[in-house]
Image 1 (cartoon, rainbow, N blue to C red):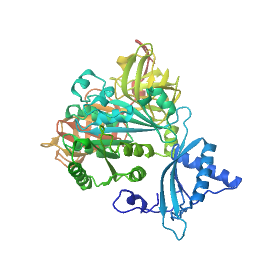
Image 2 (cartoon, helix red, strand yellow):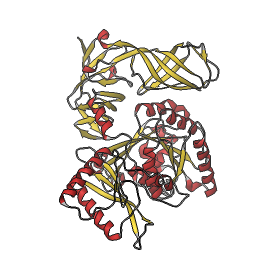
Image 3 (cartoon, helix red, strand yellow):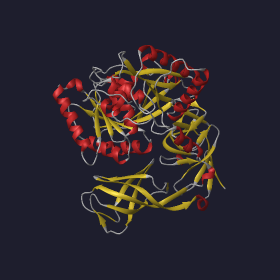
Length: 568
């Protein structure tokens, strides 16, 4: 928002960047909205619909700012009348408004003049709320699960990990206090920007019904022993953002650097939360902040740290974070005392989606493709798969094919029902995560890493593929015959290095095009997909450049009818 603020705060970064108003995007500058004519009012409502569509249900109005970004401001009476008109416009399109912040500006006038920033958010209908996925990273014992417990349960921690108990999925996690699996927690915001969580003994269904915006936290493991699970969570669940939790008393330790590197390698925008500030002196917290700022400014990271200390900073950080990939907001908070917890909630409430409505529409026009990340057997329901719809639209009762199987075949199946955020849903759109019930389909035929696609797609699968890679670290030399675990999206399998083009061997930091071969079964890959591989301390990143495709026509299709199968 174009406002001048005192130097030394995070906000002056945003407000100095003035420019003309963009045609696209969900931010609208308005000088004033005082008693518009009926024709003008209808025009304003149409404009608001466009901005809400661009922001997928959210828009930010900046009142008192000219279209070219000039700060004029309004008198109190004019501002009151403008907000009244804005409220009428919002009612007309089925939205609510919340004042984010107000600020006085210096203008050639004796009367004090103000600028107001307002969030306009649509009231949800038929599960069409805005859903953002945030992966939670950080070293073991940094307070990740406790922070999520406090955010989603609405109760502060007792200092001994009470808040995290509801998040754990296994007995050994409760006993050791360490997350070893991937769990999901939801935090909702209603159309007025108020938090909707479990504090009023709500069920997940009630949270979904009351929310206009949902934040789904993907709680990942911090211990090095569970690194493959953490990588799978980052590559497979397609998070929009990552939250790196750092303990104030230990600073950057253990897997913190590794998790930071993973987020950067996979190009996931991340923000940092420094937890446990109640345990440390102010000097210790400042030392941890300086340590993080130093790492973020290094040439490898090249980030611009933004320390958030007020509501104003949190609003600025949310808007700038989504627009510029180089900005990294830093929060300092406590899950025990609740210090600065509200700043994180303000940030999450305003955080806009990375894709606009046009990109979303383009994805929905494509053929259906659903990544299988989890497989369950539910009594009286049958086989259920969980994952993300990469493209297209999936409806209840739709027929799809799933594969590839170990011998490279695809099996026909039918989607019996869909659940999204634990509530029934009839239609699933691109980018949304959900669970699909497949009825009597034989679970033993499924595995993580498969895809469910439209039968018209004629999906390409391969056992041998080429990728352009950078070797991040290797103790000796990386050569032909070396075995690594390859992560590409939801695919995770061991592969052998068949050939290194133009070289005999690779050392740390070198680039090359490498030919890999999966050792077990073929997989569904796409050219351009991000690739990450590891083996012990060996790590590398890259992208897929070529596939030696085995077409499904060669393999044929199979139809699974429960235990028996029918070839055709």
